[in-house]
Amino acid sequence: MKISLKRINDNYLFETVNERGNIVLLDNKTDEEPKGASPMDLILRGIAGCSSIDIVMILRKQQHELEDLRVEVDGYREDGSIPNVFKKIQLDFILKGDIPAAKVERAVKLSMDKYCSVSKMLEKAAEISYSIQLNGEKVL
Image 1: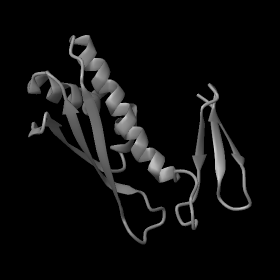
Image 2: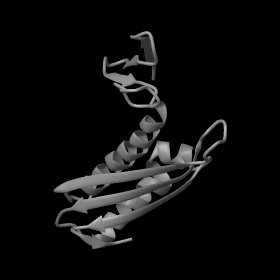
Image 3: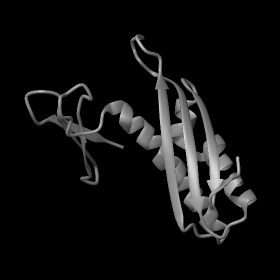
């Protein structure tokens, strides 16, 4: 895995490119009008994306297809500390589909406890918790 970064303005805007040519803009959230995501934003996006990929894959292997999957992620940092790392991360999985709740709960649990590389890496620094909602009903 390889990423290249290039500064593209005279402030804090950077362009990052991976080996496949995908571009993501990075910026400092303290800029007046940030044009990219902050590095800490990307970490939260990473855990949401990693776990979602796992969940879709696990459910597909069980012949279940989701109608919709959303994840709301809140990251909590310790104000005033340097470095200002995440101390707690809360993920709220919101799913729709004709799938037994037990299968959805197991897929999320497998992702968060076993398969999601981002989650496993972050759990060394932050408390990670999650909730699950399926078709408008709380599962966990």
